[in-house]
Length: 238
Ligand code: PGA
Image (tube, rainbow, N blue to C red):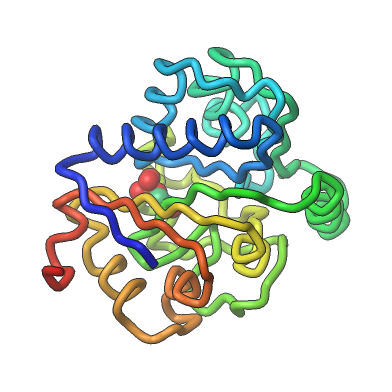
């Protein structure tokens, strides 16, 4: 893991967008995994501001809530339209269908679509307060593929800020699995804010364990961790 420190979320977002730009220049047909949540908002702003050319690339979102229609304002489909897709053309864009009649089949279809695209070249990720990546909550087997997951109460509480009331946060999601994420050729983890410091410390210095899903990234040969000072406050000084 290569840890790169930045002053704040703004600097981290610029670094992430620069890295994305370099990869897109080298490979315009990049297959990229994309996150949602608060952390990557600055990253998407930078991607849009720089008008990165995603017109030949294929994007796969990490996850989607079960039960929300793509038009629901809090769905991750809406998030992506609002923060990226309405600003920039993307060659092909995929997100799990959280309203599929057969959710298991939808998970398999999603994995197959990633394989059919040639696999993920690059995945951007956030990290949860509990160490989750995507919606792979603590306890997720490290070899899990895309599947239906039950959200922990910590995660539902953390995401309640995006919903009119906490009760409206769905209890389940479809998430790319840890193994799906680890199959990407490069992974870029974005960790921003004081609240992520403990999870980040455990992920990068602790044992590789299902108790901290992000710790699985230690087993990947090409991981860049972009941190801001607040998230990095507990890390040993290099
Ligand atoms: P956040 O979520 O950026 O909204 O904190 C990150 C995550 O849960 O992966």
